[in-house]
Length: 89
Image 1 (cartoon, rainbow, N blue to C red):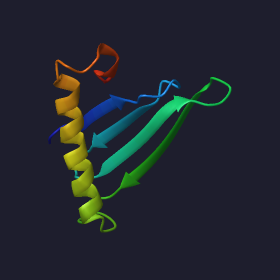
Image 2: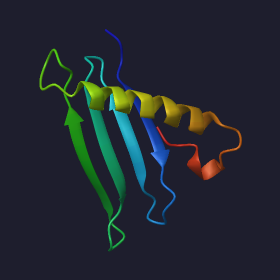
Image 3: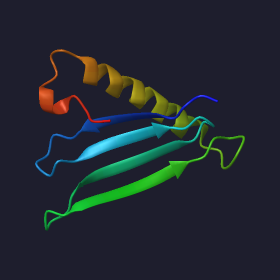
Image 4: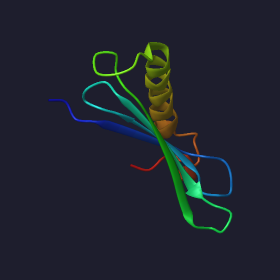
């Protein structure tokens, strides 16, 4: 069984925000936004989109997140990208 894949991209803001896309082995997509709340405490929100064969139909949305995850991977590998944007795993 293939492993899940997790891609993270740091935001440009000052609250240490990050977008993480997890592509699961069964085709689901889990998106997490993390950062610091107004009090400086860690905060996180997650949403899951199920693959067509196991849940609701979000074909275009799931495809868009796969495309976005590929773009994030390329940006994270880009040598022109500042160090703080390399992403975290």
